[in-house]
Image (cartoon, rainbow, N blue to C red; front, side):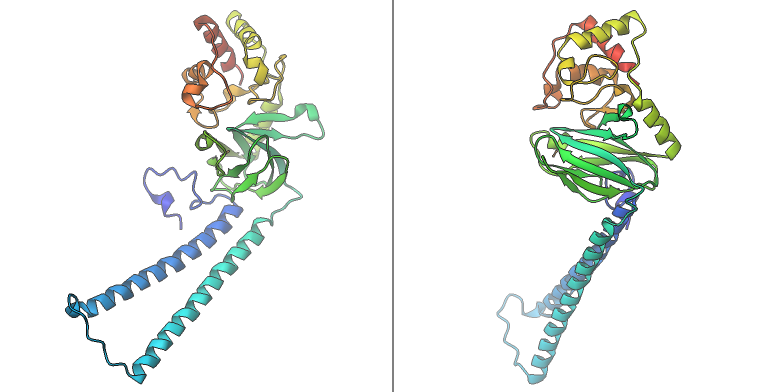
Length: 331
Ligand code: CUA
């Protein structure tokens, strides 16, 4: 179909009409079939209605005299109704079968070669882990931006840390609910490099609308480089300003909720910040990751995202500048 993606100015990176993986392609086929069947039926019904109104236009305004019924007319009418009913049943079965085939296909991907990524829903952000069984100390933890190698099957192993969320990147695959205390696996694959936006699709509280994420699909080589960089500990601060900035981080409330690998900050309440500066957004895709947005966010997250778990912070101007300078080094 791809109609929506053809509209000028429409980004096309959060729509099931522009599929970039096998799962979304199957869904789009069913969607197209249902769209064309229901669209055609709708137009034909309206056309019939307009035709009969037009035929009777001379009698509008006064009570039409009942037409004398004939056996021939009765037979025609009951044949038309019977035919329409039979057609309706056939069309409904077509849609049912298509939907059934689609759901069977969605589960069929090369599971053996799939790369597993753990995704945890939080109010209101996404925790993302790349488990590494061979070298557990090299496990990568990030947030809200999920890197995929292009053309590789991915198993999203999902659950929730609090309430029910739903993981949905419409260009890639159908929705999957993430429930607390329950693990769910969903296979997906992206065949086209790009940033595909996803969104929590289950109402989960005040900031449900600001719980988005990106699937960053990139060639295998770029993905490997990214993984290697993410597996490193954070860079040590190298000048007086960033050394002081790190001290600010470790002596304020930041350390109570966040991790920066390579420092004493190891809490997992909020997003892991070890490579914060490598991410292009903050606050679950809500704001571009600029120094200004980060400063505003640290001082008063409640003004930007009311109800968020992060409290306002009282940090003096000089301390804040050094803290931001330090966070900017966390590539
Ligand atoms: Cu999480 Cu809605």
